[in-house]
Amino acid sequence: MHLGDEGVPSSQRELKAERLRQAAGAILASAHPTSAASIFSAGGVGAGAWLGLPHAPGHFLSDAQCRVAVRTRLNLDIPGHAGTCAHRRRDGTPCGAALDPKGVHARSCCFGGWRVRKHETVKHIVGAWLEEQGCQVEYEQIVPTATPGRPEARIDLVVYGPTLGAPALLDTTIASALSVEALRAGSPARPGVAAVLAEQGKRRDYPNIAIVPIALEDHGRLGAPALAFFRRVAPAGLRERSLALRGLFQALGAGLQRVGADAVLTALPPPAG
Image (cartoon, rainbow, N blue to C red; front, side, top):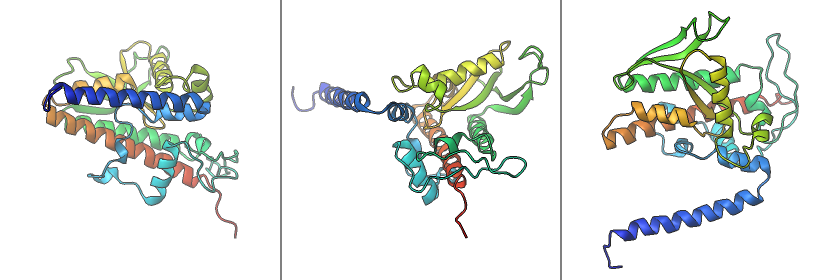
């Protein structure tokens, strides 16, 4: 090849990609199942965008939040995360479940409202971004025909846009690749298992309508239907499209990791005395 040959950059990228694939394969082959599941769940388009330089208020994490989020992404133990969960039930009593060193229970605990906050954070980030793209967005809309026997069934977002034709019915869901269900289904062996399970669950919840499940895995991976929908709505121009999608991925990642880190931090019992 001669200097300036157009094939050089693409060849170099292919060689580098192959080396990365080999290295990743070696790591995953020797990893503990939960570590492998975490690695897959932290990958994919946009999953690491929150690690970039913040350029909007919603992109920032505190030092404490960032420490937890980075350790979660790397599947490392969180120092001092031990004892019993301090998240409060509705009657004011603590959850009391044993805390694991990686914060898995704390991020998925049913008490303290953290699961709802995570869902609401993702829903409103998606809704705000869609409005920025020129869509009309209606929140928490009742769709009486969505589920047999549930005339009060609600959809998170009903979206009207110039590229959509019919209104799009979006419902957001957060899933963990470290859940028992996801681990049994193969999350340590292939990416996106938890998102697929969550998407299937959403379609079962609303069998009578064509729903677009917006699934995010707890470590950051986006489900395929969500990615396809965001690309459909994003601007056509290459630069504008890149900036819009990057902004969405960074906002989603930062919001998800911020709430997840707060769930871990607040699960710690208060200091004695």
